[in-house]
Length: 287
Ligand code: G3H
Ligand code: ZN
Image (cartoon, rainbow, N blue to C red; front, top):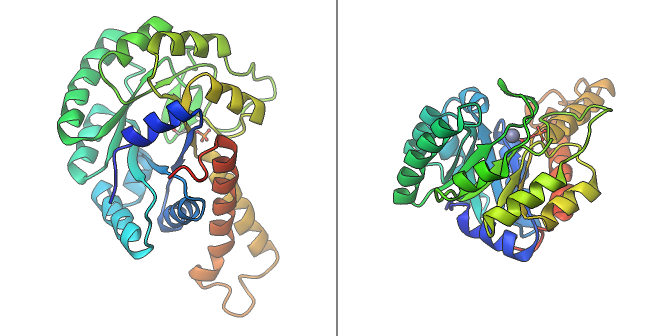
């Protein structure tokens, strides 16, 4: 059964480790993330962007697929199904479809409008026992059509949003979606520290988890980050393993063109990436 991300995140924050949110794109992605979480006894959050939601034939299809897998694959670790960078309307659709968690990304609105819309969704999610993530500042780069200026969050605005009763808070601290450029300035730990001092026990979320050096990940966790979002890195692993399989001509040998064979190396590569991240974030054995 899908669960809200609230309890798992509060435990992670109190235990000084972080949970991975791994974005899913199809059946293979979902299966790879769930099986790895089960194997490592780690709670996990499946992220779905609005673009991936359309690609997978809508939120109801995704809820059906994930619930089916939880049962058929005998997944017993806590799993939350979470809308990633959602609009207000997208969040409502996911709540209706059976998601157990949503992100409302109001970071592109003026702060008063972000507060007003987040307040409404906090009430709706609270009534249904669904966890909710809000965002202040913005994440640089682009993800599935969501483009951010990379504006570093104002800690006082973070406190204002945290006080609305959200479950978790994402803040722009110099993080970027996709690959980090050579001249990246790094994360602003000064900002993160100021945010955690003002928001206390609120689990903080680090977006743009692909390619952040290990020492920065560990420092971010020590400063209150309890959820780290990873998307691009699984895509890169999947693409590289699939390319290798095809370049070696394995798709042409025997029945190598069978999608169940063709997609297997990529699926295994996602599993390896998820495992590496869960070990780094410290969530192994925490289910
Ligand atoms: O919302 C999802 C993420 O922030 C993932 O970022 O693609 O850079 O790993 P990433
Ligand atoms: Zn993100």
